[in-house]
Image: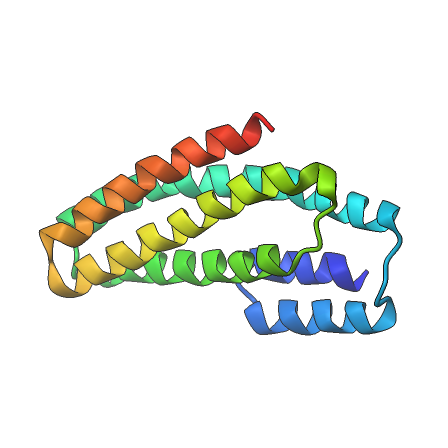
Length: 155
């Protein structure tokens, strides 16, 4: 129950609550049996693939909005929310115990996840400075995040 609640909190951007749930779950069950680890990792795989795909689909539009309206408060709010949820999910993924048979997927997924986070950081930098380099980096990292997610889906 705590693990799943932590997963939900991480997907909603509740980093502190997700960490607390994961810590408490680890205290209650410090050495989960392999079947539990497998089940958790499989559940997260399905959820994370769908969520990251949707976020990257939305990120495409966000890149366009930021490039046109970098000072718009509504656009900045969307960017801030996306950054918070991506960071929360990133911490959850890093803390997830992954069985050997899913390590290939998670290695690739983590790269896609980190690239997505970098895109959002690049966009925030662009919104603050209007640096062409930042928006270019965001677009490059976005393309690579999509590529890595495609590779992860095939594993």
